[in-house]
Length: 512
Image (cartoon, rainbow, N blue to C red):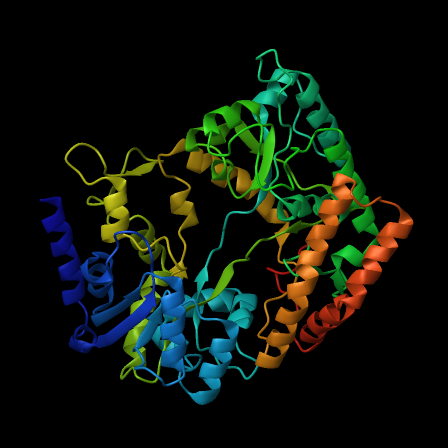
């Protein structure tokens, strides 16, 4: 009965639109979505968006395998295969956007947004840096983004239950953090009478590099960041990098950092034994504790607050609020205005909820005034069925506004806890450097440099921290010289050129 009523309400919504809007149609949609069991042709999501906008879709070219999609997308953009009307969950690269804009394969929607995508246009007007992030150097906009206005941050998590058992507050300085880890190592906070605690579990240099923020360094995956004066820096060449290495080495030497942090296996404890791991773990570095543990164990951990270094607090925002390349209209589309009306519905809270949670009364319901949950009780579909039959989350990023305020009220305590803790870190998080559009030659050079510099930095960190390479001035200077020989200064100059060319930081890129 609820299903029929929901369908009727959506039909009435569509019927209220002008006849021209109801008649508009997107002939073909192509994109990447490998969520197991999801078939776009059978999904309730697309008829619901049609009911909101009056714009229907004729055929779906859905790819579940990433390699197959990338090949098909390349051929379509190169004219070697038919173009779809639109790319949805498009996973377009900046170079594909630039090329598509130059040869006319992708439609410039910049002049159309205000009239035909008023919801998105309003958001971009309110956040000029978001607009700048999706605008090509010639002023065109050929791909629309995912807007993750409160996306989760990578967090340095610490076991609050253990802190309470030891009578310790949440650390607020690197020194306090080290002292808390020592107390976890020595104080038997899990109460089993054994000295088997792992104060901090990390999985490789990528995790360890988040500790750089203790020393004023918050670099991206290229090891690049922009300082407060707008000067681009290569983190391993900065004086504070040695302080970071010394701190991490001390944690490793003292047994505060898991002994397998730089290994490929854990001889003492299987990674998949999550219950046993939870009994021994004092902290981890990740988007959520349940990346290593079970969902119900997440609430034991709290976020370590970002810490000031020489009077300034920095923290890396992993992705920023703008995820580019999620949606594009091609020259095959006969009615770009209709395609924009369709996607614009996703840049509203209602559209975001439709993609993330489905339809109220059919897929989810409010439990009380503050919490909602999926309708999975007896006689209803399991949550996995709701995900595949009605939602669009999972797989490649979809265009639209992610409804974090709504999601933060889900009736899963662990999920609410993780979002609330992540929100404590978010005010300090900023992208290390602006989003830019590199041309093909620049991107090729960046890729070439990163292919050697990225591993060199990670291996160097591992060797210094584990003691394989002595950490003294001579060895650190030699290491930095090796990085310069591999192109660290050239990499820095490429980013500085992009900065000087006009990719100035907005509110998303630099915070005091």
